Image: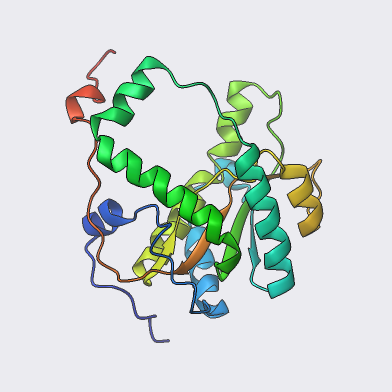
Length: 219
């Protein structure tokens, strides 16, 4: 069986250039189902707690369903408040001020154009963590996060752009109902717009220095 055509990226290049793509999503091209299925096949090779494989991937491409989901996304994003910023958060964000401003600008752009995105991918995991212990939360999130990141890496390798958002959170129950998800048993983990990227050249992002985050033997 022939391998799918992928970008000529080394593993390090793939890891360092899989960016959060908002402005450079190509709204004019449909994403083939077969391509998304390839990404899901690779995603489900990720490690999962006790090999329970409780992951699910909901893909929305049908026009009316996309419109309904896009409406929920927009309302949820505008309703989100998030945790208050700490002084350290502000310092990190200001370390590369221009980059941070571009992120906010691109977020506004995505909100304004969310209904034009050709595909939405909503990863989900069986088991809810509402009020759960840290142990239970770690096991559940650790069983879906690696798979979703693998999906995003596989998408990047195929010329697709993604961005991990938590837009589903404020209206998760409403989104679950729209998608027919059994909310009491399954948690929607993220909301990922998916499209071909406009161009495939992406650069590593500026980050705070390594010595601010790397700790040897103790904090």
